[in-house]
Structures are given as C-alpha cells and as structure tokens.
Length: 423
Image 1 (tube, rainbow, N blue to C red):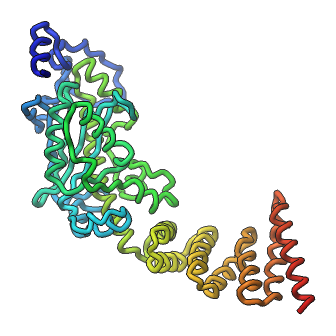
Image 2: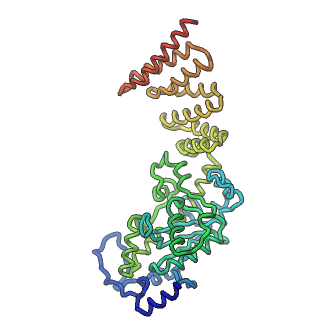
Image 3: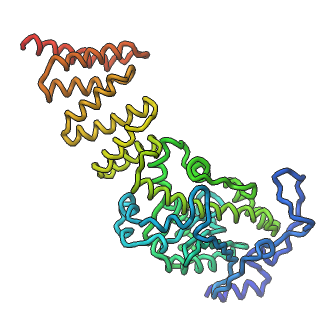
C-alpha cells in the first residue's frame, strides 16, 4: 500500500526530502577566526563530497549515508588508550547496573550508541545522525549513519537495527532517558520492529554522577572530558546546542560544510564513552590510595548504598587515610561511623565520633551521637552528660541560634542530671 502511494506521489511531481530540490542561494557570513576555510567553493557542498570516506548504502527501503572511522586499539584518547577497556571485564557492570546478564558478556561484544538530534524531545524530534561504535579485530570502528534528508530515516533505522542485533549489549551516555527512548519512538513511527529496548544496556551517566559529581560538579560529557579524561577537543568541534540549527540550515540550503563539525563532535563523543567506561570500571574494581579522596568517598557511599558493606568500609578507610580538607574528612568519618552503627559495631563508631568531636567547632552531630551512645548503650551517665554539655556550648555559639535543637539538648541534659542525682 505504501509503495502504491509513493508511486502516485511521484507521478504528481511530489518529491520527498531535499536531495532533488534546488538548494537556496548560499549566504556567505562575514569571516571570523572560528570559521572553517573551505577554499573557493561558492556552491553548496553535499556531504558525499566533503567526507569522501563515506558511502551511500542502499537498502530495499531506501538509502542512507554511512561513514566509518577506524582507530587502532593503541589510539590514545586523552590519557587512556581505546584498547585498555578490553583488559577489563563487565562483571562490575553486572554489579552496579543490577543486571546479571553482564556477567557473561565481554566489552568486545558491545555497541556504543550516541545520537545527534533535531531537538531535545517531542514526537517530531528526529535523530538525524546516529553514531554506533564497536570493537572489531584489532581496531575500534566508529560508524555514523546520517540522514541527507528525512527520506533516509527508514533505511538508517533498518541498517542500525541490523548492527544492534549483531551485538550483545548497548552502552550509552544518558541513553536510558534520551537516546534509546527517542530511537524506539522512531522505530514505532516507521512501523519497524527492534529488540533494542530488550538488549542489555549500560548508561554511563548514573555511575559517572555517583563517582565524580562530588569533585567535578558538572557531569556533562564535555566537562568530564576536560577534568577527568584529559581530552581536549579541537576547533573543529561545535557546541551541542548549535547542532539542531546547523542541521536545519543544511536542510534549507543543501550545504553540508558546517555539518563536518557535527561528524567530528559525534566521533569524539563515541571515543570518550570508551575511555570513560574504562575509568568507571577501574574505579569500581580497583580503588587505590593514589585516587582523589573525594572520589574514594563517593565510591564508598555508592558501595554502601548497593549493600557491599565490606567493600564500602575498606574504601572509606582508604579515603580517611588520605590528606584532604577537614570538611571532607568529617564526611568520611560520619559515613563510616553510620555504617558501623548500623552493623551494631558501636564501640568502633564511638571512636570515630570522638575523632570528629575533637576536630570540629561547628558540627555537633558527633557530640549528640556520643551522648546517646554513653547514655543508652554504655549506661555511663557522666560522659553522656559531658558530651551533651559540649553540644550545648557549640550550639550556643552558632548563628542563627538553633533554638529547637537547643531545647532538645537542654531537655536531654536535665534528664541526665536527674539520672546522676538518683545514682
């Protein structure tokens, strides 16, 4: 039925897409220091001419432009090599991703996915470029599917689905919330079936936030590249917020010169996902004394959250042994003491609270915990009264005055004094 309608539209002169339309006259902007030099080309340039390594792949449902870039495993991306990931196993992903299917997988069998789209979300949002990268023999291949116009989408989705079906798992950065739902929606709109949403999937954004948000603040990929991976993009790159506009300009004018920068942007995204995954797995499986204490603290908190108590305790003790700010030192000890208290190891927790109390001039949490510990578990009222009084002294020096807390502390002090009198 669909082919019959297409035949009738062609007979009426209706053309789908922009490839057969006369491009709009090129507008030459004033020269700037960031504008690429394209020689003496006055006419709009097609993507096939600008990226001669690419090819137009024809399928029964149409054609699509595909570009492959091949990197050796020894290629350095920032301070790591691409092949370093293959020395690690995905067992860690099965642990922190809560998906046991990763226990039987290898990173060599995975597919990295990243999309460039016409907007952030909505039924009309289109993935006009999909990067799909994978290991093959002794190389890492970055494959980019590009829509020369909207008419290429069915072919692109068909080719992409074939590649997804040949791989055991997917790896993305923010793909759980964005890339995969968007692509799944496009498959639905084009009435194509895909197993993509049922394939094992690891989204790198959540573990990146867990491990490094405390130190880096922003966990956007470009921020992680600069502060963690040692990646420096060249002037070929383009800010992500400009990409939808550049593609819209291309559809209007038929000139792909600025889109070369989008291809570069997408390629670097794919390479960064590989080295970022290497860092995530290493941090989870091999925490070292040379790691930043903030990173070790974040890892210990995450391990405790997932229920790996022994690992969390070892990581937090490793963090506490590092030189760090007094604020971070107190955070580490508080987290460790809370874990020990939960495990009924109260004497060990009390030792940590004493370390905090001896070096803190504002935080009275440790004083209150010590007062509770000696009153209810040691049945020793005198030190409980001492730590309560110390907490009151600290609270009275704070501004604004914590009146509610002070009232609770005075009530505790009165109760303890009555107990001492009765004794």
